[in-house]
Length: 85
Image (cartoon, rainbow, N blue to C red; front, side, top):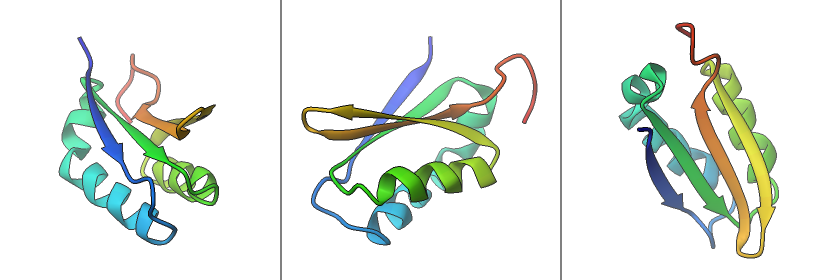
């Protein structure tokens, strides 16, 4: 079962959104790389929907952005579960 870590950064604007997410990613990078953990970031800052996925990509992770009633949900997870990033 995959553990989900929820990060609610609504009310923050970039670059704060990016820095808060980066901190959580760095704290959990080993678990994300194993595929056992994913992060779900909830934000209301539209700029974060481009900066956070771009940073996740540079770190070798996948990111999906979904528009929800409460803002944007950005799911960060290991790409290609069958391989090591």
